[in-house]
Length: 156
Length: 76
Image (cartoon, rainbow over all chains, first blue to last red; front, side):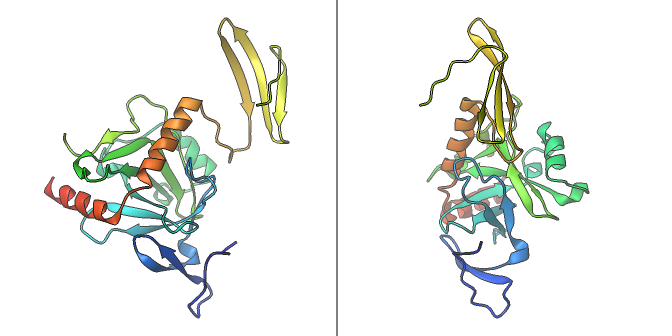
């Protein structure tokens, strides 16, 4: 399974993974999130980790472990829209066997046009949902007209 | 592309686990029934392409962009 991971630490559960943005990072096997299937367009890549952004902002990196230069910036949608509650979440909770509400992590992917950070958008149509207990997740597809795939984050 | 002709009520299999049934043909519209395992993504083409394209655009984000949005966020 972990064919591209090199174990450099004496602890076999810790791997060193190369990334584009962070250089080499250490990942414990119990931090790995499995997206099954992977994100649309990248379905063959399934293993990710969440990395907190170091500055005081609610952004996280969803870093792929199977492809060093594949990483997404994500945010808890509650930071953008406190009442974000797509109907598909209920089914996703069942599919992912989420037992407690606090085990469900919902994240939306951000798109930042190069050189135009003010025009950043959030993809409210394709949230990533993760069962934190099993670390299994998937990209949910939300087809409700009030949730855009290009939701503007900062005022225009 | 494989092209098959089917009548209403007929179906087809893709592999062992995916079954598509022609439920109804009404004028220019057909209704399809799709049975597939939960890990298979089934979406209308335009929705699939929209999400796929958005994921592709988002995947190009650089660390410098995140530093900028973090700064903008703190100003808001």
